[in-house]
Image 1 (cartoon, helix red, strand yellow):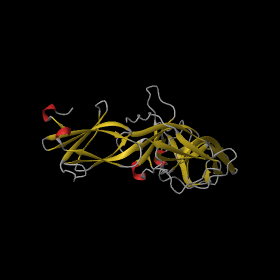
Image 2: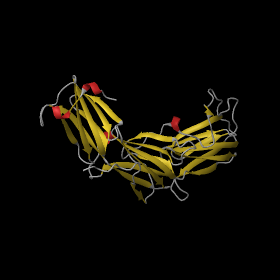
Image 3: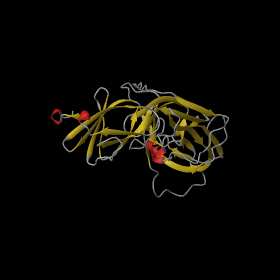
Image 4: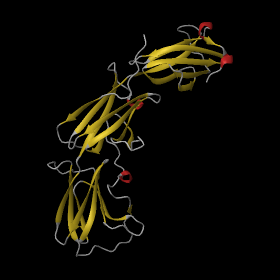
Length: 320
């Protein structure tokens, strides 16, 4: 029986938790160097050997919330304060920075650009500092996304074989999408600005790939799970059914239309393959053997290729 090939796009099952989105124990690194500043192409590092703070400086307290009515974020923020005019190098001078939650700065009176980053979410606001203490708030309009995947049979996928990549929801004119975060481990909370994102789930390293668009809502944690139509197969060349695997075997896996999928070497060749029809070719010394096999989504599968005359190919035909 031929198993139908999975569609390129599959549905993510998304669950939005209504409680305010907070910090999860397992999160993507909030590397300061990866934060993109909306409308700010670059910035210069703060100058060294700055003069002591003057008494004429004004005090500004900065807070950030996920939504208009949300509570102040207490940790995980990265604050940067810039002068609004670019310097000789074309970059905005960075005058102050801090990490944590609510932060307080002493700055010379004047206008500044403030950027708050919370994971891959962020917001920029222009502020004015005077001689009197002042408080400013930034609304990030952000939420969280946690991703996972299962097999269509309901089986669990080993976490070390599952990765997600998150792209911008809108494609460019050439059809490409900007990559936001690569190689996200399952059940990792990623902080993102509210909006639609294109998510790619990869099981293994061959062709078990599922794509879908998913919406992140401000102030909430969205949990999304995808079903993979795939299975891990282990190949072995044997002299008879149930026999020992033959060493020094080279493997080539082809699709039903003859396109190469994967090559491997060894007595046992394990790989994750998307559901569908394949041709398995095993070469041992000067002999070549072939078997057609249908990969069905579900548990791991052992596939034997019997080194018999029935399965032998003419070595003079060669392989593409």
